[in-house]
Image (cartoon, rainbow, N blue to C red; front, side, top):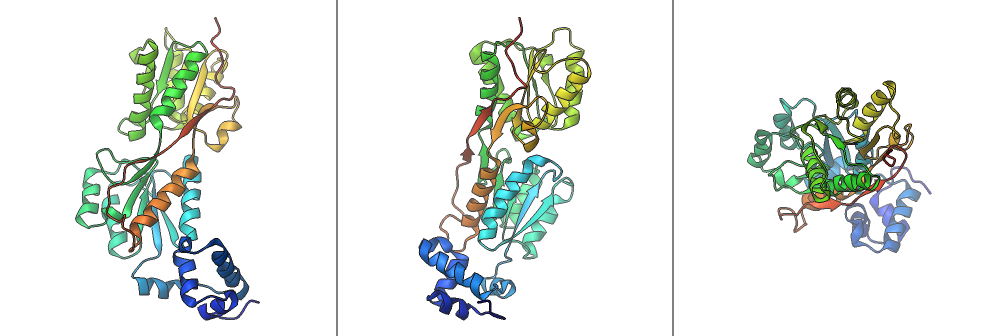
Length: 344
């Protein structure tokens, strides 16, 4: 029965446990048996007990919040990563703050201030383009141990990261197109200095070399993961005398822009040109034609990054400052209708 202004003692009495056990269920539920956890949470629901976050945070000297940095909140790719982060962080009763890093000019100082002002306990960064000066500010202010990268990472940094196997994903694309008979394969990249761009290009080039595929400089087209860069790449391909028969795009958004422009200019995808993306965002399955792409387990990127951060900001954890090797998340090729056997 819901009680007005229920106290922790009321929850303990309802569940038949001690108040210490109730506190443990709220702060470290993994330390309890499943039966005890269920009993405590049932009692919380029954009594209507609510945690006094302000008092708890003051007592533990924690902010009770985690900041997530996103390079572009308008990009649908990040939705499932954020959902995974929120799922894990919420279970530990932390709030999730989200910031867009589009304005990099003052990002370093502003981010450090979140820690200085005791607004956050830790940070998950989905943006690998933070500058060396910004990273140095984290070191200088002693907060590097409270930061985890997800999806992207900063080249040369030893901060923990959770990332998809981008090299393998690119290799799978080239293997699939090769199996369909394609030998003239173009690649539209991501931003020039992006770590994902380099990893996917590395995998693509390595697999081309292994298979002995030809490579022309004009078949490597710089993009930026956007629809517009796909449109621009299509315009360049249409102007080529020696056109590729297939295109590997560094993101699904690029693939959508490419396909729409090719189609508007009278080419059929996949009969005249095969196209494969990377990410498997929600629209990929419903696009026309449905996009063959590399699926990243975006939710797993979020849940694993959140779990890793919680372990590092836990005052009782032995992993707080320990070096951690990058956590790799497997990818898979999802075959749909945008790639077809080469027409002779």
